[in-house]
Length: 119
Image (cartoon, rainbow, N blue to C red; front, top):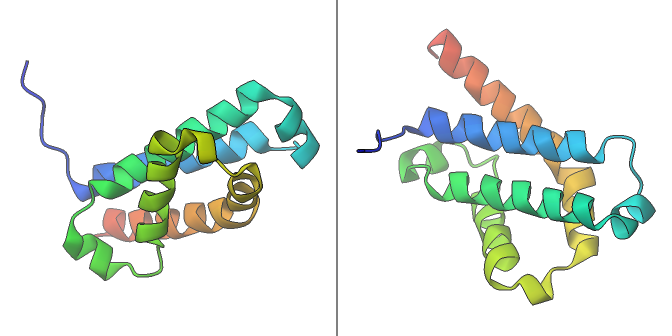
């Protein structure tokens, strides 16, 4: 079976979906909940990995057109989670989840609304 080539809009939509999942997983949860719940930590880590994987497939033209997204940091975090799993910094992951993920969701929603309107 041949896989259909995906476009940047699909990858942006995936990033949005996974970022929303992170926010859903952590809604109403505290840092101590995060520390105590291995399943929660792994779910957040995996969704964050997937955000980075989708981001790594976005074209340079889209990346350059949206400097408001910290592309390199997102992709670098994916590499740390996958390849440096022994070095995962729970403080960093929690802070990204709490502080940066809502911003990423808002940016991606805005970009995708513009695409829908044909802007």
